[in-house]
Image (cartoon, rainbow, N blue to C red; front, side):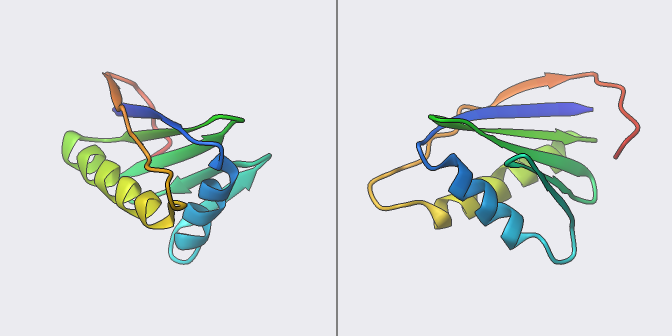
Length: 103
C-alpha cells in the first residue's frame, strides 16, 4: 500500500470537504463523520480532514498508478471549487509498505 498526504493551507477546509463529498456521493461510497469526509474509490481511499487553517488530504492506494491518478483528480476538483484569491498548494508526502486489507 502507498499513502500520500498533503496539508493544504486554507481557512475554508470545511467547505472543500463538503464539495468533494457532494461531487462523488453518487457512484462512490462516501462517508462524512464529524466534518471529516472519506471516499472509497475502486483502488484507493481518500480522506479529507479539515482544521482551522488547513485541509489534510490523505490517499491510501494499492499501487503507484492509482495514487498518482487520484492525486491529480483530487487536486483538479479542489481547484475548481477554490474561492477567488485563495490558490491551493499541495505538498504531497509519500510513505509505503502498509499492510491493509480494507480496500
